[in-house]
Image: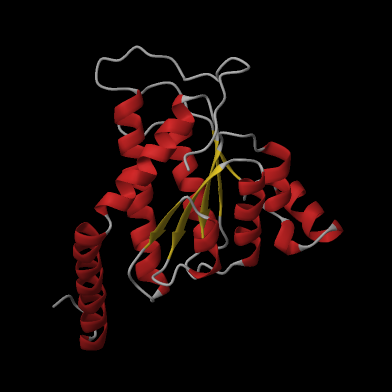
Amino acid sequence: MSAGMRPEDRDRIATAFRQSAALFTTMAESMAADVARAADLLHDALASGGTLLCCGNGGSAADAQHITAELGGKFYRKRPGLPAVALTVNSSMLTAIGNDFAYDEIFSRQVEALGRPGDILLAITTSGNSPNVVDAARAARLLDMTVIGLTGASGGALAAHCHQLLAVPATDTPRIQEGHIAIGHLLCELVESRLFPPGSTAGRPMPQRPGEGRGPAR
């Protein structure tokens, strides 16, 4: 045992690791098809020239920024950047909307301003009930955007507004968030590998011409 490590700390650390390992085993058995379906939706939107909008609060805001950075920059390989926007980073926009309208509208107003039919929203809330995230999903559906939800086990109010719900089978917030970032990494990996396979010289997918349409999956 390391010098100074208390037995209760060692036990707590070991328990957390075991809980995480058990959760990922359960996710591997129960969520693979749902994650693949979400990757299909994200790929189809980006391949048609759409944009990913992503939102969440607190740790979920950090996850939104992390995922959009992986797509806009790179995941495994250097390739053209993909259009991905975290709705959590513009402090002037967030504070203006919170002050002039309501905090519950900080994401939905941005979806209204930036979203287009065929774009995709990744909405992240561990409870599934964050009002501003649920409102963003409602706004996205009104714009004929596709909605993917990342939640905990219950799915919460967000579930009713998602084309694909990814509900991590846990109720403990840290474990849920660990599941969320693992799923986010998988979405980025799958989309990157399909849009830019090894040896690809493809450019960034661009929006289709007028009349060709980019409606969401139903």
